[in-house]
Image 1 (tube, rainbow, N blue to C red):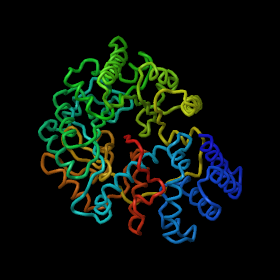
Image 2 (cartoon, rainbow, N blue to C red):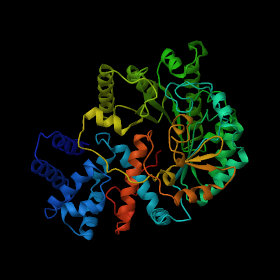
Image 3 (tube, helix red, strand yellow):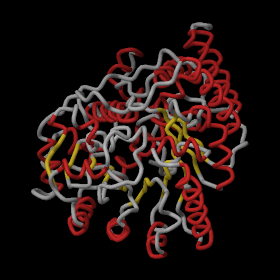
Image 4 (spheres, rainbow, N blue to C red):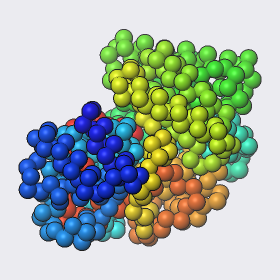
Amino acid sequence: MRTISKLVAVMQKLDAGVISDSTAQEAFSYELIKQRYLEMDDLQYLYNLFRIYFQNPTTPASTILKSLNISLEKLVDLQRVLQEASVIADLWISLLYPRSLLMRYAYQLTRYLHLNPEFLSSAHQDSAQPHIYMLEIHPTNGLCIYACKMCLWCGGGQLKARQIRASAGIDVLPTRSWISVLDEAKDLGVERIIVSGGGETLLDQVKFREVVLAAVRNGIEVLVYTNGRLLSRVDEETLDVILHTGWLRVSCHAATSEVYARLVNRPVDSNDFQIVQAGVRRLIERRNAVHARLKVGLGTVLQEVNFSQLPLIVTLCENLGVDFLDLRADCIGISQALKAEQSVLLLNDLRVIRGRYLDGGLPFHLTIADDLQFKISQWSKMELTPSKRCWIPFLRPAIDPFGTVCACDSIGEPYTRSVSPAKYVFGSCRDDSLRQLISRASQETLGVWCQHCMPGQVALNALFEKIVADFKIGIRPCDQPFFHRNIEGSN
């Protein structure tokens, strides 16, 4: 960790213009030679390559070849050195690096592409036999008792779930249709599904159970998003099915009853916050009793109502015994924006909590969204390469509760779909198979036109466009500097 801290500090000084490029190269070389990661011969080339990827991991290889004036073979050799230097591999996913979340995606995606070479071939050739990496589905009844201030499904609390169902004009997709979708998903190469809202995931327990078990039968990993309110009340059969999933995240955006009630637009005396805590404890106790591999954690959207609650949320995670905490901001802007002084206080709290985590002082895994990481450490020269095409339909398309297949989860939500181009909606599972819908979508090159593309999707899109461009000139996924065979799966 000390070497990682030193390398990041060097790059931060370079970013701020405090030191020269030659001084940064000298410091970089010293740290890697000291760790016996490389010989003297390639130090200058390797430093320049590291600097390029540190500032922009989505830089196409063609740009790097021109910049460094080296051969393709030389570039691949240098990238393998970066792969094999464990301090660099650890740096990419350290919270000290402001694109650590993107690099976790990069590790997972290049591993998948290495194991499924047909995926990349079909993507860059616009094949009639497309593949999907990950699929987000909303096998719900379209309802939720909450109307959260940052929820895209209800427009920040402006719409009631029953209004959304009525405006759809059709009933929700039946369970048998979801099972057919999952049978197709396996054939399309889907490695994992995210079962999430469009209403609350656990309101229809029978549908939830059958859909999850269908995915498990097909060898697909299942990740679950829920508001957690029903975890203390679901029946034993549903609880056991949850234990078959790999990862469950409870959306919990507060650490006191009063703030929680404000965020979900419910009376304080409904005791929702206490009920959610009881449900999380119940699930963790059952998980521990049967030694299931399920990871349980909280996800928090930091916003104007809860920005001062962050230290309390960390304490809540410690008391509940969760495995992870995911922190992000309201990147769509659906909730009220923070004032300048509120942002300063929030960033200070984030720095303290990140420091505790890096020092080993937190008993759970902490993830901070990259856009927050930039603000914490005030990075400036870290722009991604702009994408020319939307690749998300192959990486993480979504199906809403009514069976509508969309380019991504943002388009799967009424709030953002209403202000987005119609081309991002591919059709319905009621009328066509998932394969037919994705195949038709692959024949038309979608531009990057969406006004509400989330930062994570923007980054993933840029990453995949680099991988595709590099593949076309002979660089395989396993040749990328961020290829790693042993990275743990995450969402």
